Amino acid sequence: MSTVIAAEEKKTYLNRPKAIGIKVRKPSFNPKAIRRHFFANSPVMSHLLTALSSTFPIGEQFFVHSVRNVRDKITDEKLQAQIAAFIGQEAMHSKAHAEFNDAWRRDDYNLDRFQAWLGRRDALIKSVPPKYQLAVTAAFEHFTALLGGYILRHPEVLSTLDDDAIKLWVWHAIEEIEHRAVAFDVYQTLYKDDKVRRSVMRNVTTGFASLTFYSATRLFMQDWKKSVPKVPQNLYGIYMLSKMMISLIPEYLSYYKEGFHPDEIDYSKIVEYWKTKLADEYGMESFQEDVHAPIYS
Image (cartoon, rainbow, N blue to C red; front, side, top):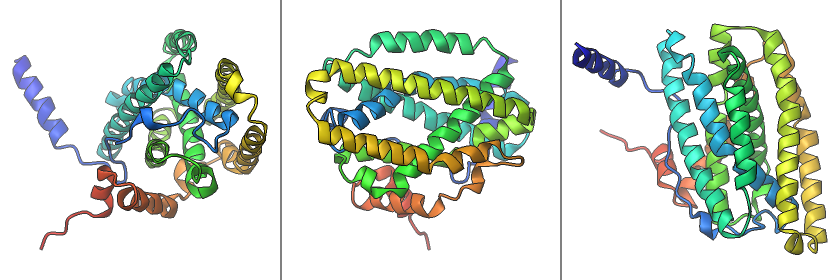
């Protein structure tokens, strides 16, 4: 009997429609080729991005967990397909950033204590009701889409990066934009509690800012002998960070609007531009399949 049920489940999975606009891709980059101060030779910005990366393996796994918690309650086939693609993309992000983080451990960075603390926080947040876990994920997905969109829209941010750093961060940005609405749609389908959604976003904002600042500062201090002397580069990094934060305020605040939906922020043109660039100039096969799909006569 169990064999029959398993076969039926497998058949259902195979017959599930594919998610339109959300594709699971395998990244191709060499984390060991990325310089320590890979962003504009600025320790401030490089450590900030590395601090973010250090949170991704555990964070992305939590996002997947929060959606899996409730996916059996979703009856819409289109949303189920998007959930499957969301899970696939986040799994790839977790793996890629774990590889990036391991390369930085090679350079004597101590990420283990911080990640152990993250693990304890992860266990704590998984103890709250699924509704709140999903609201946390929807809030973080808004952040990652905003940051991804900013990176793609501002070539000056990427102009100083090594090729392998671009392959990692632009690939990740594109996919965060592709699946930015999935957790939000699941939350709205099941709960549609805007009061909780907004309240959780306020808490996530405070926690996300504090967490990033703390971990970036720890990395900077571990690297202080090489970081402190780079005064002009650090000032440039602070300028870029300030510029980004100010320019993202309107998009961030849109989350609190009545009737907000992540898709109202249109990233389509810039995403297509970078897909083509990654395919043609950086030779990433997974994007070549997107841009140069075979035509059958």
